[in-house]
Image (cartoon, rainbow, N blue to C red; front, side, top):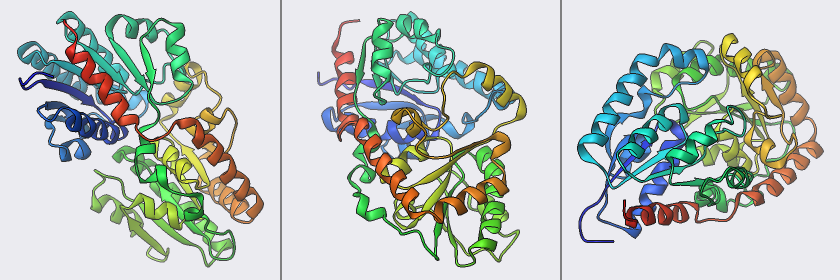
Amino acid sequence: MSGNRKTVFLVAGEASGDLHGANLVRAMNRLAPNLHVVGIGGPYLRETGMEILIDASSLSVVGITEVIAHLPVVLESLSSVKRFLREVRPDLVILIDYPDFNLRIAKEAKQLGLPVFYYISPQIWAWRENRVHIIRRRVNHMAVILPFEAPFYERHGVPVTFVGHPLMDTELGSLSLNAVLHQAGDDPIIGLLPGSRIGEVHKLLPVMLDAARLFRRRKPSARFLLSQAQGIPDDLMQSVIQQDGTLPIEISRNLLDIFRRSTLVIAASGTVTLQAAIAGVPMIIVYKVSPLSYVLGKMLIRVPFIGLINLIAGKRIVPELIQKDANARTIADTVFELTSDPERLWAIRNDLVEARRLLGGPGASERAARIALSLMERPR
């Protein structure tokens, strides 16, 4: 690269994109230390030294009706980004997932002649597949992290590379199965992972805690570990759990420690389920949105599973409790069934290990970084 300082504009509108984006930026900085990275991100990207133009927490919502309610903030942010691109003309635009926002940014960047690198594919293989034609017109290169995504893009003529999953670069990727073999028995430890968005936590944590209380009636020795994700305020967690102070529950920000100690986890659908899968921890996936979002989703989504690990494996490895089934009684019953059946827990762990092998080895962030940097070297 030349000695001139180059500017990269990056958009990571959600918590998982913030995490993976931070690993990408670190890899890029190792390979090209003179970069100026600016854009939309959260705490992980801020830690890398990226200049935060817009905080991602203002954009992170889940569900169709929830997005509609949040539209004014999204549109204002979109306008700010377009203005920045026109005024600064960065050397590269990196977009991470978050498609409804990012594909509009890609259109603006393309019109300005800026190279666009899309890291982590939107789930267009699940719904609204026609967006692949928009991606082909607006994106210079896709770097995908799930093994079945590359053939999909190749079929549609989109330049694509499967770089492996960036979670394999974390401590999770080197965690041996032996580290998480908490035995089923009389003293189960249940991890509660209510999500990384405030709206998710509001919706799912009370249900998870009710399920924990019901389960403890049948297993009085059970204990619980509650994961507090980055960006979730302390007062929110405390206000919910203090409604009943009798539950033996420990709040932790250390997800790896929760995985090591848990017999199984109850997890909000999302990246954390893949993290649990890589760690080899049996889980129950729960998913709940507004009734309208769910009805629309049922009409539009074309995949057989919600959980990424089930999709990767091509079969239902772990239970999925969706919408009306994501209630305290059903969750508690499912936890009881699994913790009472050591052989089934072992079978789940073994299936998770097999699925983990499909995610590729370490080095995803560096492989993606090299592709991104190569795009900046091409003449516009």
